[in-house]
Structure formats: C-alpha cells, structure tokens
Amino acid sequence: MIHKKVKLIAQDGSTIELKVLNSTLGKDVIDIRNLSSHKLFTFDPGFTSTASCESKITFIDGEKGILLYRGFPVDQLANHSNYLEVCYILLYGEIPTKKQFKEFKKTVIRHTMIHEQITRLFNGFRRDSHPMAVLCGVVGALAAFYHDSLDVNIERHREIAAFRLLSKMPTVAAMCYKYSIGQPFVYPRNDLSYSGNFLHMMFSTPCEIYVSNPILERAMDKILILHADHEQNASTSTVRTAGSSGANPFACISAGIASLWGPAHGGANEACLRMLEEINTVDHIPKFIQRAKDKNDSFRLMGFGHRVYKNYDPRAIVMRNVCHEVLNELGIQDKLLEVALQLENIALNDKYFIDRKLYPNVDFYSGIILKAMGIPSSMFTVIFAMARTVGWIAHWTEMHKNNMKIARPRQLYTGYTKRKFIHNNIKL
Image (cartoon, rainbow, N blue to C red; front, side, top):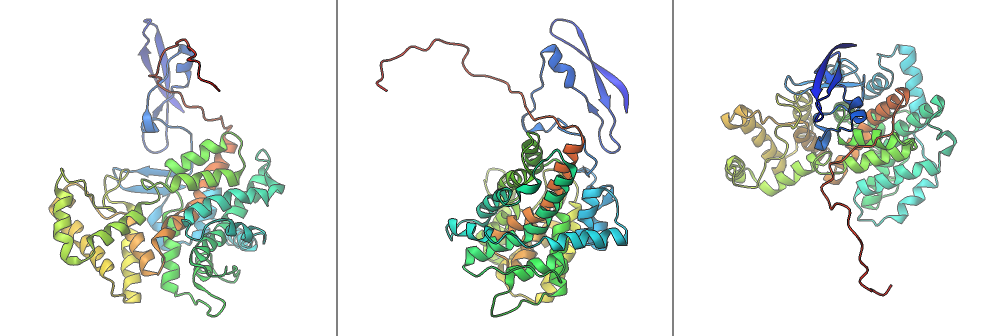
C-alpha cells in the first residue's frame, strides 16, 4: 500500500515524485524505479540501502535481535519444530497439517537417492579438493541428469526441482565428505530422519553402521533450522540474480553455493575454528584478548558480533544451549574446545565486549558443535549450504511467482572517455 510520496529536485530544476511503499514489518522503502525515465540512477555499492525485491519469506530486525521465518520466531521453530517442518513453512508459508506434513516428508524421503552415474563424477576431482568445490560442481551437474523438469515457466516443474534439491542435497554433501577422506559412499536410509540420515551417510562405513545419538541428531537438526534462511544475503541474492535470467534451479543453487563459499559469508565458522587453532591453549587467551582490543592490531576475534545483529543474534541463544548439551553429552577433553568456552565466558562478562555488543554469534557455537561431533572444518560450509538450500529454493520459487525481472544493475563509470585507437604496428 502506498501511503505517501517524496519529492526530489532534478538538476534541471524539475520535480520528481517518488512513491513510498509500506512494509508489514521494518522500514518503508522509496520506490525509485521511475528515476531511469529522468536519466537518473542511484549509487549504492553492496545494495546496503536498496531493496532488490519484495518478499514474504524472512524478516530480520538487527537492532532488536529478531529473525522470523514466515512470521514465526526462529528460536520457537528451533526448539519446538524439526527441519522438514520448517522447510514446509518456508516453502508454503504456513504450518502443515499432520496429513500435509506426512505427504511432504514422504515425498522428500522418496527422492534421497541420486542417479548412479553422478557418483562417477566425483572421480574427476582431486582427492584433496575442498568439499565446497566438489559440491558446487556436482550440484550444477544435476541439471544434466534431471532435465525432465527444467522448464522454469511451469509451476509443476519448479516444484519437482525443489523437492529433488531438498532431498538430494544431504546425499551429495555426505558424498563430498566421503570422497575427501577416501571412504566408499554410503547410500541414504529412508527410515531415518533428515538429520539422522545425513549423519548416517557421513559416519557409517561398510564394516560399521553408525548409530545416531539422539542429542547429536537433534543438534544437527537445530543447526539446519537456524541456517535455513537469512533474508537477502549475498548467496540468496546470487540465487535470485541467476534465477532472474530464467536459469535452471540446479545452476541457480550452484551459484548460491559458490557465493556462500566466500569467507565473509559462509566461511565464518570455519574461520572461527582457525582462530581457535591460532590461540591454541587457554594460557594464550589473555594475549589474544589484548590484541583484539588494540585497534592498531590486525587480529580480530572471529565468531563475535554480527554485521546485521547489533543486539544478540537470536540464533546464537539457541546454539549456546545446544553447544553445552553436546559437550556435556560427549564429555570431550579438547584444548580447542576449552579455549572456545573460556572465550565465551570472557565475551559474556568483559565490559569491553558487552559495551560493543560483541556477543558470541551462531558461527562461533556451530563451529564448536560440529568439531565436537567429529566433523572437519572443511565440511562446515557444506553443511551450511545443505541447510540454506531450502531458503534459496523458497526465494527462487517466490521470484518466479512475482513477475520477475532480469537483474541488470547500473554502474558509476569512472574510466576513460571516448578516445581514438592508434595502431602501433604489432605483428599479430
């Protein structure tokens, strides 16, 4: 609903009226689409002040520490729901009935297998390839095997592709891990939960079946829920941009995976673990805390504070409880985990961190949990991608329903003006 307008004065003295569009939550936005008719454009690197789309999926209020999936607080979903139910909510907008959820779960489970030829693709990668590189390549290649439903203009095709991605991502992710350590692939078991099946494929071998610990299985489920979507972040915007050209869903999700791989985005929990390795022991913590407080020192404590959340990250509150549940259950004596817990205590009690709201974030706790579960840091972002797949699919589906327009950002050109080419007689 439009409730007011703002006026701009152009260079030629003419008046330009811009509509103000209402949001149901958060700030209203100025509709600048008609600026181009006046040969004017805005300059907004990183799109930090620009709404690139209209969406009904996820809402974030970083100042108040709020994260809502379809209006439901993320902590309520993590504590009282399961990942597949959250997937249904993100995709369809409402809580499923028992009948709807049973059918949804059945459909997801029935598509966990992948085409057998896909397993041979892995042999084309070096054994020491980063699992994210393999995941990006294999997911993109799925379009070559499931090309019977790639017409993005047909709603049923979009739905089939969505289920295939949601169902097969844990299988492909686990295969990336197995390939990296030289173990045979483990096929999915449809009698297990979504998270339980993933852990089974990660840790079972032909000579020893992995029996999932309920506490670890629930911890994995909560990690997936808390990472399922996060509004218009870099990877989601990448999926939307790729999708705006009409690209097939596998290509779009592969593009999202590539964006997520960046250390400033999905690699934060991996970077957090590297920081713990650099600190090494509890005895070294005071020195590194001092360095973190020194503005002239390049060292930064990873996993503390958040670019979006200026208050406590609502996901971190849930993850903190899960973290302590997992560590208590496993009773692991690990010097890096001891360093992490000591850092957590300092951040929650040190005035320097409290005043600057540098609370431990979701990446800090998820990295500790995954390490305690025996998952290597190279797989952290793969698991993030597996969790975020449903969010990417939800946004990709939504944009196709909202009369999408191909993304075509403008630029501020600061290069040469037109000049004459003078040939210097170089032999071709």
